[in-house]
Image (cartoon, rainbow, N blue to C red):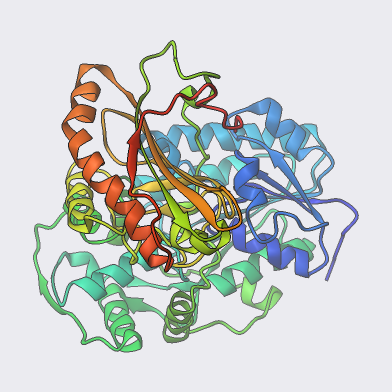
Amino acid sequence: MHKNTDKPVLVTGATGYVAGRLIPLLLDAGYRVRAMGRTIEKMTGRPWGKDANVELVTGDIMDTGSLQKAVAGCGTIYYLVHSMISRKGAYRDADKTGAANMVRAAADQGAEHIIYLGGLGDIHHKNISKHLVSRNEVGKILQSSPVPATILRAAMILGSGSASFEILRYLVERLPIMITPKWVRMPTQPIAITNVLEYLKGCLEHPETRGQTFDIGGPDIVSYKDLFALFARQAGLPAPVMIPVPGLTPRLSSLWIHLVTPVPAAIAQPLAEGLSLPTVCTENRITKIIPQDLLTCDQAIARALDHIRQEQVDTCWTDAGALLYPEWTHCGDSDYSGGTILKCGYRATIAGKAQEVWPAVEQLGGKTGYYAADLLWKIRGALDLFSGGVGLQRGRRSKHRLQVGDALDFWRVLEVEKPHRLLLVAEMKMPGQALLEILITQKDEERCELTLLSRFLPKGILGIAYWYALYPFHQFVFSRMLAGMAEAAGKTLLTPPIRFTPKITNACSLPRA
């Protein structure tokens, strides 16, 4: 076994599902890690973000300059980025460009090894999906480099928070009767995320893996129908009744997945297309090089469910992507040359300290709800879902904690300043961009002020009409939200919620990502 800790290990896509779990594993093994992501704030908020052996760098595979700087001085590179979420339908070209940029940067900077996690499946199969073709293309580009590249090819990854596992989980939990396509009987060889991570780390420590391609899988070969039954048993649910329908295409399947699970159609469709061919390991050489105890499907599902129940989901598929501050948040004053920023604000004085009220603010959304007019929020979520948005399906990672970059229903957490400020950006479908800010200001030893402020930059006349059509609902909901948060915190309102028009001289003082 070879272990070189002289040079840092570069992990790209650091806030993604796999990379976010690999980094602490490498740190525990004694490696120095350079974590590359598009947003420093997201990485800083991770449990490993302030580790003494972690260096955080801003980088983008589409930006050759930042990529060259990120690679400089590193020995091994983990290439764990994918453009499916950020680029949606255009991900294939973006992934090829990104891989070519990485090959050039690795060669220019004298890197020693590239490790890549790709997809499992026969590239020549008649039902091969564009997603698996893209994964194969990226692997070939990386292996064309003078820097040796190791390719690991995996089928479904079983672990709390993975997109594949979330699809499995929500379909079984919500559909006791399923109308199923032919692919439910297709054989697959899932692998637990724990085993994936061990293989990734093992490739770093075994030079004989360099330049090789390996299939990785768990000990079980099952059908997707079997997986539904296994999950139901582990979750204490009856096995779903399945009614096969020959005409249910991957596209129709993806739309159904979008409506039933938190995974949007843009991600569900490429994944569903890959279910129409066998995804079984054709060789197992890596089991001799990197031996480990492979979890069965039963064990992997049980472990994932246990982590979900205990709110120990370290990373989630929703973590991926850049943390995008709307451009108008950097405007510097309340007027913005790109359009009029519309605002609606409410505030109330509460008996108590900020740290006593903060837990109610931090538990907003998910199963807790919004403390008022939850039916209206659900209607808005349903409208968003049927218009192609994420709706309220995503929920939140933890009931009690928020960190920068977290998905929260159809919001994304931009900033968390405990116990005073929470800033959310809307990711719902709407003709404009919206921010929701909650502030707690300590007035004196016995009183604090709770403020809720919504800001909206409309897109054209439709955006303006949208804002004013919803404005009466904003007034109704926001005032009651403040009262509901105070009640949830066990505090008394000293003044009723009062509407105000903020005069913000630095309305958009957010730091540039």
